[in-house]
Image 1 (cartoon, rainbow, N blue to C red):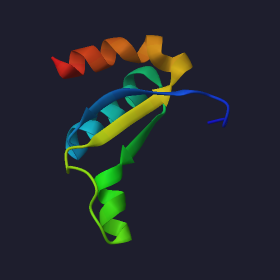
Image 2: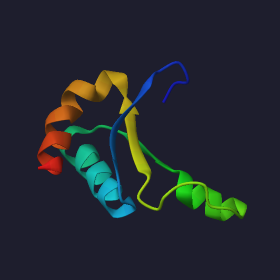
Image 3: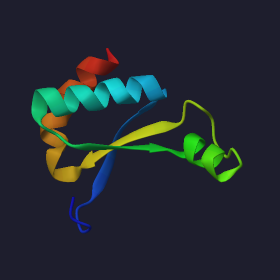
Image 4: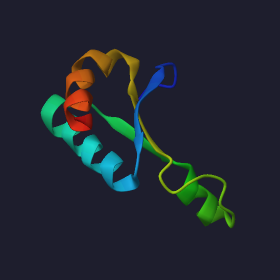
Length: 76
């Protein structure tokens, strides 16, 4: 991804849910996604600063139209 592209959070949930949705987005729409897991990052650094379910999934703003139907279906 280019640094000037804006990222949009499309989902927050458990690590397992985020990984599953990321795979669906990549398979069904060819949308690349980034997982941000502050809890795991905190553990790696020696402290925990968030909840274990606080995992976020981000995509490029330009991919939002393609991703929205997949995210909505996943949440149902």
